[in-house]
Image (cartoon, rainbow, N blue to C red; front, side):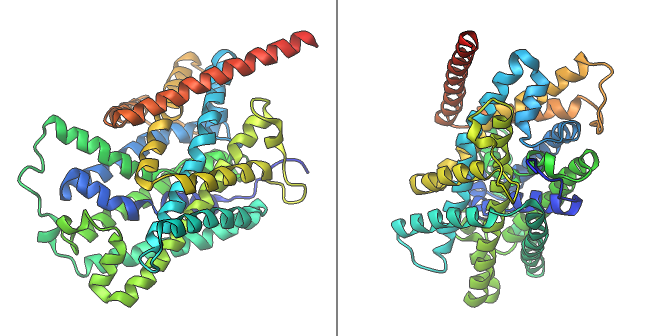
Length: 442
């Protein structure tokens, strides 16, 4: 059998989405977000991240239900932009993903190694060894068939969800409302710098929400995808948004924001303050486990993107190979893991997080939304298994918020994102010219 297997049900697909979303992200970004916003008004960044995720989710739900195939955005962009431009957009996405996906994995591995220093004193070199070793461990774990991984995802989510609920319950049983809502006098001074800070803080909160679309990358392996893909997306975002907001407010009610904004181990500090050092060590172990589960889901989903492109003849053929007995794209997984291993040794966490978001906004998120709106108006009798309510308002709102986040970022990240697009265009036209030449020779 040389094809992917539809072996993931709704609970398994939702679990994979949620463990993808809740990785090391919220535990390392909370101090950044508090510091950038300068107080408890940091809640606005989490709300903006949730709003954007919901608006963008309507786009993903339509596309995922319409074209439930391996590769997610690779397939969507090709279908949305047709023969003339679809191949170019889909190639740009794969080119971007070949850089961005290993960065996502590397960011989680780097965050894991940094958080581990709460338990073990590690030098910079030792942290690099840990992050690289974690990537290799994940490749080994993922070297299994999809049905086994689906069952494992549910167990992993139970641990992740229980850990966050423990944090939230602990926070609200020791909650100091006056501390939690100790806004500085200039908290809501709506000057340009306020919106710049909100945009930059939202980059970090959005990083923590990313993953709600992971099920679309696995579209060819979802049972009853027309219903289960939209359901899993919205269930994931709703559940995680509530957990994140409660977690952020709860932490502010236990640790003053003036202290929290500089904490390297915010959740460990939280548990240590409430229950002592031994409990904090146990909680840190759980957080590290959560980081591993998230990277598990991330690598699983992204390994399907180069596979889909290669199978379609729009990427290197070797990526189209499936494991002969376990039926998963093992070459794609190994290359993704290899690049992530290298990136985990080279980069810093804060820079990686921002780069991950900014480089994806134009080619993936905004292009998908624009393409879907155009498809609706181009095809009046369009048949969609799922239709977004109040079309096209959610898609337009998503585009506006994505642009706000993009333009609020530092110029070096914007230039980097544009540079990746231009380099991808150059590679695409070189590839196409060679392809046309080879056809003529034949």
